[in-house]
Length: 96
Image (cartoon, rainbow, N blue to C red; front, top):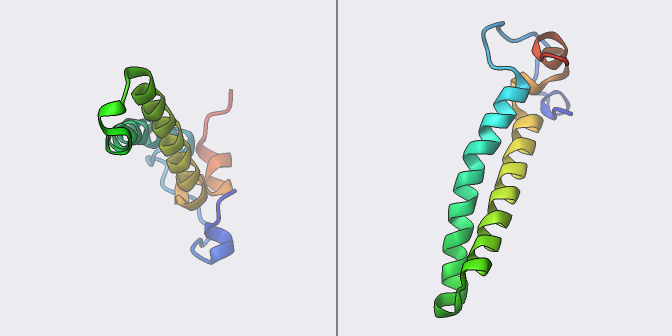
């Protein structure tokens, strides 16, 4: 699924064995960006609604911001990170 090979950014070699696996990198990136996405959407809700904001509306915006930011960041990591190239996933990701 990585776009690096199609764009010509990949040389097809394996990464170092002490680097983070793709699944852990995606999980950590998504977790960090979900917090930032919820704060950003909360601010946008306050700017959009002003004094008409309510707690459920604010929580809904924050939840949607967290989900969209975490999903987007995980997808971008999966597409463009060298750790997520097929040869590295096959060699280093733990399969259960």
